[in-house]
Image (cartoon, rainbow, N blue to C red; front, side, top):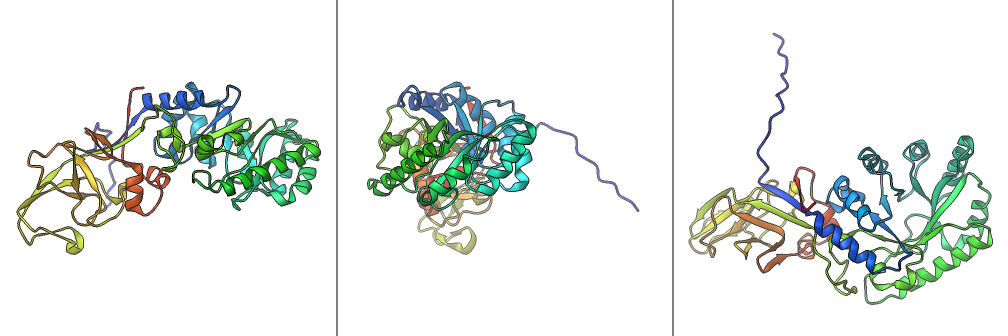
Length: 384
């Protein structure tokens, strides 16, 4: 007997009981503050890769462009296509390094790719001459990151080769700091010197990029001598500093909050265990609250570490974080009930769980935490 599958009709589901709140008003204000901290003629690039570090690029990019950003940067062609489909007409910088098969799409989407290999530069030049247009590119220089780009030691040679490509428009030249947000700026200043040498060699070869940029968020804060004509910000726009020693800008506010509702409460008696592996054991009568968010959503997979906020107070995690749930000891919070709102990342009352705190649990960095929240956590936008 043949059984045909039926497609369920579209239904309006209730909101998920775990979610991310994005304060677009705070994002707008952060951009205004960052813009005011720069020289009036310094261009501002919003790095919106990885869904704008978890905020959602379609919603955050228009806010950035309306409040001081001049250009957007992404890493993949898919990210760029998503923004073009959303109606973003501003210049889009494609970070990283393209492969030959990417070139037709770069032109179709009207992108400004980074170029760090002569093979790709020549291919873009060829396409530009065939179409009788000059393809805007940003020359990527490896000043010490040793990831992408033309090596700074060979700048005389590749500058001359680039000067022979009339199909290219040199919209920019960029490098990237390996360490800009620490107190010791020795390496950063070495990179600045190398970058300036490359700029001189480009000029000597007759290549005059419109804009030079080397600063990420840490450089924007601590290395004003490297602002050149453009700077790039990603994490700073979220109101988060890349390290504890960076210069501060008054008024920056966190944009992202992660929340969940208590969906169950379990009583425990002395000797009862909680979670896989029985890694937590009750020493007294108590209560365990369950939040429907876990490592499949991007929360660190830890055991008996960390806290959430409930009723404006810290409540410690009990046992191991599961794929879809984490358990919280609320023995000392008798007022907590099913349906109460918990803060997993952000502020509640006078308490705050910072992204750096979660990064510590993850044994990683704040960027990893922000970009690691999964798409199944709905984004709820506030203060548009």
